[in-house]
Length: 322
Image 1 (cartoon, one colour):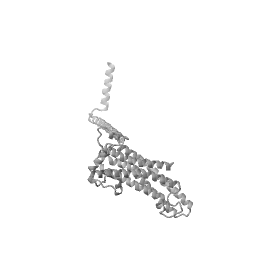
Image 2 (cartoon, one colour; image 1 turned 90 degrees about the vertical axis):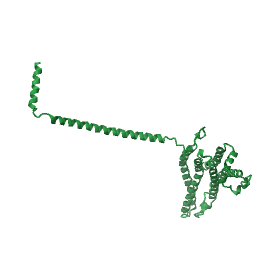
Image 3 (spheres, rainbow, N blue to C red; image 1 turned 180 degrees about the vertical axis):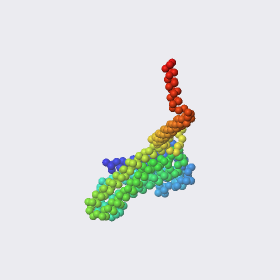
Image 4 (cartoon, rainbow, N blue to C red; image 1 turned 180 degrees about the horizontal axis):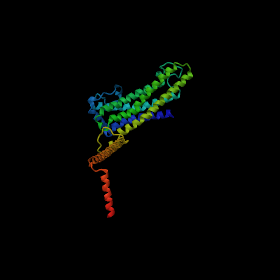
C-alpha cells in the first residue's frame, strides 16, 4: 500500500504549495488580486523581471509600466507554483510505474557500473521532480521577498519555512538518502558477479532507503506540527490582533519549571529551618550547662554536707511537732 499512499501524498503536497501561495495573495489583497498588484507596484523598483520564456503569458508586457511589471511578477509566481501541482503527481505516477515494472535504478540488467543508477530512468524522473521543486521554491521565495513588509504582521517567513520544510526539505532529504544508498549498493555489487544477488541487493537498497526516509519523516512531523501550531495561530483572525514574535507552545513547560523551582525552594527553606532549629537547641543546652556550672561555682565553701543535713533534720522535727 505504500506506493499508492506515496502518490496520494505527492498530490496533496503539490496542492498545498499552490494553496499556500493563494493564501498569501488572499491575505495581502483581502481577496482582490488587483489590490495585490497595486501593492507590488509600490515595490516595482525592487522587483526582478520575470523569466523571458514566460513573456508569451504576460499582457501587457512587463516593460510597459510598473503596473504591468507587478502583474507579470505575480503571474510568474503563480505559474511557477502551479507547474509543481501538475509535475509532482505526474512524476509520482511515472515512478510508481517504473518501480512496478522492476526498474529500481541501476543493477537491474546486470550492469555493474558504479554510476548505473545516475543514468537510470528513475534517477531521470527524480531530477525532473527536483527541477520542478526548485522552480516552485523560487516562485514562492520571490513573492515573499516582494511582500514581506506588507505581511510582517502574520509572520510570513515562519509560515514560509514550515510549509517549505514539510514539502521541499523532506524531498531533498529523500533524494540524498536515495543517492547515498544506491552509491553504496553499487560499490557492493562490484564485488559480486551473481545476478540474483545483485537484484536482491538492489531491492533491499530501495527498501532500506525508503524505510529510513519514512522513519525520519515520522519523527520530523512531530516538530513540524508544533511549528505549524505556533506560526498559524487562530487568534490572527480575531479583531484587534497585534503581531507577536512567536506564539509559545502550550505544553505547560513554564508552569512545570515554576513548580520545580517551588519544590526546590521549599526544600531549601525546610533544610534551613532544620539547621536553625538544631543550632537553637545546641545553644539552649550550652546555656543550661553554663548556668549549672556558674551555680556550683558561686556556692559558699562553709556549707558543708553535715550542716545541710542538720538543717534538714531540724525541719523534719518541726513538721512532726506541728
